[in-house]
Image (cartoon, rainbow over all chains, first blue to last red):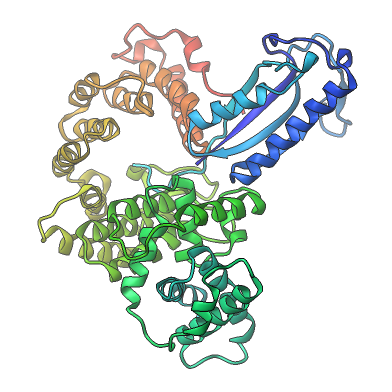
Length: 135
Length: 405
């Protein structure tokens, strides 16, 4: 029983095997991709392993505190920022092996030519609740 | 009748329905319906026999849904020969239900969810909140679990050890939401102890009570972890400790030692010490030796190294540690502690930082980060010359290896 974040990157990860930008796909290929993602999430709901899935807009703003009485400073987006997160899925599974298995399936979502994208997904464990017995 | 008393009726009511031949999933739904009805009706009109009331209502609910469900093959048989309601062998039924919900065909998370729902009488929403997953996900997890065990015969002897593992998981998983899972685990283990005479059930109950007794002292007001040695022992629950020790002694007297009894014995020795300095570490090491013999677990050997460090000095602890695999979870935390005790502050600080990086939960990570920071600050004040044990490993950058958050 552990939660994992499956993180999908616009950029920052290694290149996918089938690395064609989505705007170069056919409309049918895009629909097939979306359907795969929906069905994947629905299947995880059915197995009792789904927690959350969200997609993020590609462009955001950096914000920081600028001192007492001053409005926060905003900046960006920075084109040179290496890492750009596209979205995530949170799963609650019995083992690390199961998390890897599911990430592998999600990475097989179809892309250009109807072939699996083989994109790299980042798998990150959540820090857990503190156990009752610690010593 | 309070919530816990109310829910304690769940397993025996469910057991009666299953014993009457109702499919487990259908019986479970019917009992949940009856519980919801009871919450509505009882405050104004409390029944004289709550259990009998629940059995009657659950049975009626089942018949209603069976009538509505044309696909249910055995419907006629069941409807025609309604057994007279009356006291069944409720302890046996309760025990069978524990076995069913912890059946080896279930994954641990499914067994936990099913146990909390079918034996504990919690709602799906409460269980979902406790484990921080959406209610729909938990509902699916429970209904899959019910399907998985629906073919299991109810009167087969089960394995107590699998039930104990599930209850241990419920106790140890921490808690959130409006249900205290540790308290719920204690309630369910008590109920199991009443249904079956088994020294390891008693051992687990004692272990839970001895840890629960220290729980409030374990967390500071800011939520940070207070290590055992620094806890305010005046805040320990002495009544709970006395109960745990009593249960443990009765179990140990039967001379059928098991893992949970040995763990409880260690917890009891901690609970028994008026101050941390008066802890009987020699006896604790002996119990760890028993645990190693019983489980052969590398995690137990790791904890044993800490106890050896306290009983025979940090060097002995480090020697015990040297025989273990460095890839073990919490190895750097134990190594850091023993090196600190041995006066190797630079090494200890570096190891605490590594341990924080690998910590599986926030409270532990923050505690380890603070330990690294404390030693690094000490070293800055005293300077390298003030630390006779500095072992040449004082590359200052290593202390900055703490996680950013």
